[in-house]
Length: 259
Image (cartoon, rainbow, N blue to C red; front, side, top):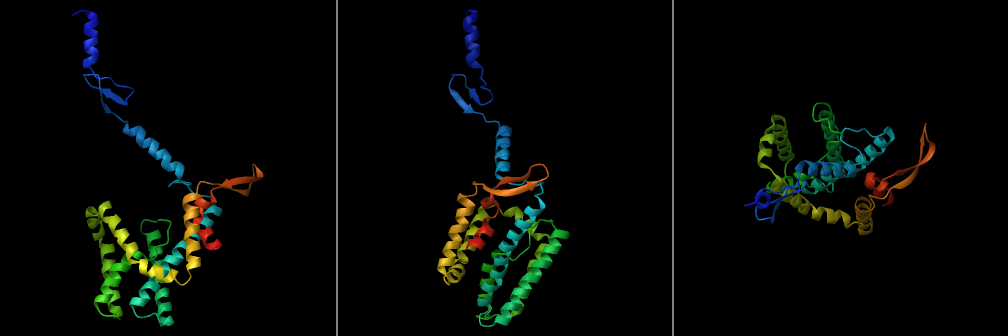
Protein backbone atom coordinates (compact mmCIF):
# COMPACT_ATOMS: atom_id res chain seq x y z
CA UNK A 1 0.00 0.00 0.00
CA UNK A 2 1.56 3.27 -1.08
CA UNK A 3 1.31 6.54 0.85
CA UNK A 4 -1.50 7.89 -1.34
CA UNK A 5 -3.76 4.88 -0.72
CA UNK A 6 -2.94 5.00 3.01
CA UNK A 7 -3.98 8.65 3.28
CA UNK A 8 -7.22 7.90 1.40
CA UNK A 9 -8.04 5.02 3.77
CA UNK A 10 -7.38 7.14 6.86
CA UNK A 11 -9.58 9.90 5.47
CA UNK A 12 -12.45 7.45 4.97
CA UNK A 13 -12.19 5.86 8.42
CA UNK A 14 -12.09 9.17 10.32
CA UNK A 15 -15.32 11.17 10.75
CA UNK A 16 -15.41 14.54 9.12
CA UNK A 17 -16.68 17.59 11.01
CA UNK A 18 -18.37 20.00 8.69
CA UNK A 19 -18.06 23.22 10.67
CA UNK A 20 -19.72 21.57 13.66
CA UNK A 21 -22.99 20.87 11.83
CA UNK A 22 -22.33 17.48 10.19
CA UNK A 23 -20.56 14.16 10.83
CA UNK A 24 -19.73 11.59 8.14
CA UNK A 25 -19.45 7.89 8.89
CA UNK A 26 -16.77 5.48 7.66
CA UNK A 27 -18.62 4.72 4.44
CA UNK A 28 -18.68 8.38 3.48
CA UNK A 29 -22.47 8.73 3.85
CA UNK A 30 -24.00 11.50 5.90
CA UNK A 31 -24.76 9.90 9.28
CA UNK A 32 -26.09 12.58 11.59
CA UNK A 33 -26.56 16.33 11.79
CA UNK A 34 -25.05 17.84 14.91
CA UNK A 35 -26.67 21.09 15.94
CA UNK A 36 -24.98 23.37 18.40
CA UNK A 37 -27.49 23.70 21.20
CA UNK A 38 -25.79 26.78 22.54
CA UNK A 39 -26.14 28.66 19.26
CA UNK A 40 -29.73 27.44 18.93
CA UNK A 41 -30.60 28.65 22.43
CA UNK A 42 -28.95 31.99 21.74
CA UNK A 43 -30.94 32.43 18.54
CA UNK A 44 -34.17 31.50 20.34
CA UNK A 45 -33.34 33.90 23.16
CA UNK A 46 -32.67 36.71 20.71
CA UNK A 47 -35.93 35.97 18.90
CA UNK A 48 -37.85 35.97 22.16
CA UNK A 49 -36.33 39.25 23.31
CA UNK A 50 -36.93 40.86 19.93
CA UNK A 51 -40.61 39.96 20.25
CA UNK A 52 -40.83 41.66 23.66
CA UNK A 53 -41.22 45.40 23.90
CA UNK A 54 -39.64 45.49 27.37
CA UNK A 55 -37.41 42.91 29.01
CA UNK A 56 -37.84 41.44 32.46
CA UNK A 57 -35.28 43.77 34.04
CA UNK A 58 -36.25 46.86 32.05
CA UNK A 59 -38.46 49.67 33.31
CA UNK A 60 -40.80 51.42 30.86
CA UNK A 61 -41.10 55.22 30.95
CA UNK A 62 -43.45 56.67 33.54
CA UNK A 63 -46.14 57.60 31.01
CA UNK A 64 -46.01 54.09 29.54
CA UNK A 65 -46.36 52.61 33.04
CA UNK A 66 -49.51 54.67 33.60
CA UNK A 67 -51.02 53.59 30.27
CA UNK A 68 -50.15 49.91 30.77
CA UNK A 69 -51.40 50.03 34.37
CA UNK A 70 -54.72 51.48 33.22
CA UNK A 71 -55.03 48.70 30.63
CA UNK A 72 -54.31 46.13 33.33
CA UNK A 73 -57.06 47.71 35.41
CA UNK A 74 -59.52 47.39 32.52
CA UNK A 75 -58.57 43.74 32.11
CA UNK A 76 -58.86 42.79 35.76
CA UNK A 77 -62.06 44.77 36.38
CA UNK A 78 -64.14 42.75 33.94
CA UNK A 79 -62.61 39.44 35.05
CA UNK A 80 -63.05 40.22 38.75
CA UNK A 81 -66.65 41.35 38.49
CA UNK A 82 -67.58 38.40 36.25
CA UNK A 83 -66.82 35.81 38.93
CA UNK A 84 -69.45 37.01 41.48
CA UNK A 85 -71.98 37.56 38.70
CA UNK A 86 -71.59 33.94 37.57
CA UNK A 87 -71.69 32.61 41.13
CA UNK A 88 -74.77 34.66 41.97
CA UNK A 89 -76.94 32.33 39.87
CA UNK A 90 -75.71 29.27 41.76
CA UNK A 91 -76.24 31.06 45.08
CA UNK A 92 -79.82 32.09 44.16
CA UNK A 93 -78.91 35.80 44.26
CA UNK A 94 -79.91 36.77 40.71
CA UNK A 95 -83.02 38.59 41.99
CA UNK A 96 -81.32 40.23 44.96
CA UNK A 97 -79.20 43.23 43.82
CA UNK A 98 -78.17 44.01 47.40
CA UNK A 99 -76.69 40.53 47.86
CA UNK A 100 -74.96 40.73 44.47
CA UNK A 101 -73.49 44.11 45.41
CA UNK A 102 -72.25 42.67 48.70
CA UNK A 103 -70.66 39.74 46.85
CA UNK A 104 -68.96 42.07 44.35
CA UNK A 105 -67.70 44.31 47.17
CA UNK A 106 -66.29 41.28 48.99
CA UNK A 107 -64.48 40.12 45.86
CA UNK A 108 -62.88 43.53 45.31
CA UNK A 109 -61.91 43.87 48.98
CA UNK A 110 -60.24 40.45 49.05
CA UNK A 111 -58.60 41.17 45.69
CA UNK A 112 -57.07 44.39 47.04
CA UNK A 113 -55.95 42.70 50.25
CA UNK A 114 -54.36 39.82 48.30
CA UNK A 115 -52.61 42.31 46.01
CA UNK A 116 -51.11 44.15 49.01
CA UNK A 117 -49.89 40.89 50.57
CA UNK A 118 -48.54 39.58 47.26
CA UNK A 119 -46.72 42.80 46.38
CA UNK A 120 -45.30 43.21 49.91
CA UNK A 121 -44.54 39.73 51.26
CA UNK A 122 -45.09 37.49 48.23
CA UNK A 123 -43.51 37.30 44.78
CA UNK A 124 -43.99 41.07 44.32
CA UNK A 125 -45.29 40.73 40.79
CA UNK A 126 -46.62 43.92 39.13
CA UNK A 127 -50.16 42.56 38.89
CA UNK A 128 -53.50 42.85 40.65
CA UNK A 129 -54.36 39.62 42.43
CA UNK A 130 -57.91 39.22 41.21
CA UNK A 131 -60.44 36.41 41.18
CA UNK A 132 -59.68 33.31 39.15
CA UNK A 133 -61.98 31.41 36.84
CA UNK A 134 -60.20 28.15 37.65
CA UNK A 135 -62.20 27.78 40.88
CA UNK A 136 -65.60 28.31 39.26
CA UNK A 137 -66.17 24.76 37.89
CA UNK A 138 -65.32 22.98 41.17
CA UNK A 139 -67.19 25.63 43.17
CA UNK A 140 -70.30 25.19 41.02
CA UNK A 141 -70.04 21.41 41.31
CA UNK A 142 -69.76 21.56 45.12
CA UNK A 143 -72.59 24.06 45.42
CA UNK A 144 -74.95 21.85 43.40
CA UNK A 145 -74.30 18.86 45.65
CA UNK A 146 -75.95 20.70 48.57
CA UNK A 147 -79.15 21.55 46.72
CA UNK A 148 -80.30 24.46 44.62
CA UNK A 149 -79.56 27.18 47.17
CA UNK A 150 -76.68 26.13 49.47
CA UNK A 151 -75.74 27.76 52.73
CA UNK A 152 -72.97 30.41 52.71
CA UNK A 153 -71.01 28.28 55.20
CA UNK A 154 -70.10 25.90 52.38
CA UNK A 155 -68.38 28.64 50.41
CA UNK A 156 -66.63 29.82 53.57
CA UNK A 157 -65.26 26.33 54.25
CA UNK A 158 -63.96 26.14 50.67
CA UNK A 159 -62.04 29.38 51.15
CA UNK A 160 -60.56 28.12 54.44
CA UNK A 161 -59.21 25.02 52.69
CA UNK A 162 -57.80 27.22 49.92
CA UNK A 163 -56.03 29.47 52.45
CA UNK A 164 -54.58 26.48 54.32
CA UNK A 165 -53.17 25.01 51.10
CA UNK A 166 -51.59 28.34 50.17
CA UNK A 167 -50.01 29.16 53.54
CA UNK A 168 -48.69 25.67 54.27
CA UNK A 169 -46.98 25.33 50.89
CA UNK A 170 -48.72 22.06 50.05
CA UNK A 171 -49.25 23.38 46.53
CA UNK A 172 -45.48 23.10 46.00
CA UNK A 173 -45.72 19.35 46.62
CA UNK A 174 -48.62 19.04 44.19
CA UNK A 175 -46.69 20.90 41.47
CA UNK A 176 -44.19 18.03 41.29
CA UNK A 177 -46.91 15.88 39.76
CA UNK A 178 -48.52 18.59 37.63
CA UNK A 179 -47.09 19.04 34.13
CA UNK A 180 -48.18 20.33 30.72
CA UNK A 181 -50.30 17.21 30.14
CA UNK A 182 -52.31 18.13 33.22
CA UNK A 183 -52.49 21.89 32.75
CA UNK A 184 -53.60 21.93 29.09
CA UNK A 185 -56.72 19.74 29.55
CA UNK A 186 -57.56 21.63 32.74
CA UNK A 187 -57.55 24.97 30.92
CA UNK A 188 -59.70 23.51 28.16
CA UNK A 189 -62.20 22.19 30.70
CA UNK A 190 -62.33 25.57 32.45
CA UNK A 191 -63.08 27.34 29.18
CA UNK A 192 -65.69 24.79 28.10
CA UNK A 193 -67.43 24.88 31.47
CA UNK A 194 -67.81 28.67 31.22
CA UNK A 195 -69.08 28.60 27.64
CA UNK A 196 -72.70 28.59 28.78
CA UNK A 197 -72.28 31.61 31.04
CA UNK A 198 -70.33 33.49 28.36
CA UNK A 199 -72.98 32.80 25.72
CA UNK A 200 -75.76 33.92 28.08
CA UNK A 201 -74.12 37.28 28.77
CA UNK A 202 -73.04 37.74 25.14
CA UNK A 203 -76.56 36.91 24.02
CA UNK A 204 -77.84 40.06 25.68
CA UNK A 205 -76.13 42.05 22.90
CA UNK A 206 -74.63 39.88 20.18
CA UNK A 207 -73.63 42.88 18.07
CA UNK A 208 -71.45 44.36 20.82
CA UNK A 209 -70.00 40.96 21.72
CA UNK A 210 -69.10 40.20 18.09
CA UNK A 211 -67.47 43.60 17.56
CA UNK A 212 -65.46 43.17 20.78
CA UNK A 213 -64.16 39.74 19.76
CA UNK A 214 -63.26 40.86 16.23
CA UNK A 215 -61.42 43.96 17.44
CA UNK A 216 -59.48 42.02 20.08
CA UNK A 217 -58.33 39.37 17.58
CA UNK A 218 -57.53 42.01 14.95
CA UNK A 219 -55.42 44.20 17.24
CA UNK A 220 -53.56 41.47 19.14
CA UNK A 221 -52.94 38.98 16.32
CA UNK A 222 -52.87 40.80 12.98
CA UNK A 223 -51.95 44.45 13.63
CA UNK A 224 -49.44 43.88 16.43
CA UNK A 225 -46.46 44.33 14.09
CA UNK A 226 -47.64 47.65 12.64
CA UNK A 227 -46.29 50.77 14.42
CA UNK A 228 -48.30 53.97 14.58
CA UNK A 229 -46.71 57.45 14.28
CA UNK A 230 -47.32 59.56 17.38
CA UNK A 231 -45.99 62.99 18.38
CA UNK A 232 -43.11 62.92 20.86
CA UNK A 233 -40.90 65.38 22.69
CA UNK A 234 -37.42 65.07 24.19
CA UNK A 235 -34.72 67.50 25.29
CA UNK A 236 -32.46 66.33 22.46
CA UNK A 237 -34.84 65.95 19.51
CA UNK A 238 -37.49 68.43 20.71
CA UNK A 239 -40.78 67.79 18.88
CA UNK A 240 -40.56 64.73 16.65
CA UNK A 241 -42.48 61.71 15.44
CA UNK A 242 -42.24 58.45 17.41
CA UNK A 243 -43.29 55.11 15.94
CA UNK A 244 -45.05 53.15 18.68
CA UNK A 245 -46.50 49.59 18.41
CA UNK A 246 -49.85 50.74 19.78
CA UNK A 247 -51.78 47.64 18.71
CA UNK A 248 -49.21 45.39 20.38
CA UNK A 249 -49.11 47.31 23.66
CA UNK A 250 -52.74 48.38 24.08
CA UNK A 251 -55.10 45.89 22.38
CA UNK A 252 -57.44 45.75 25.38
CA UNK A 253 -57.67 49.54 25.78
CA UNK A 254 -58.33 50.10 22.08
CA UNK A 255 -60.93 47.36 22.04
CA UNK A 256 -62.74 48.86 25.03
CA UNK A 257 -62.78 52.39 23.62
CA UNK A 258 -63.89 51.39 20.11
CA UNK A 259 -66.54 48.90 21.15
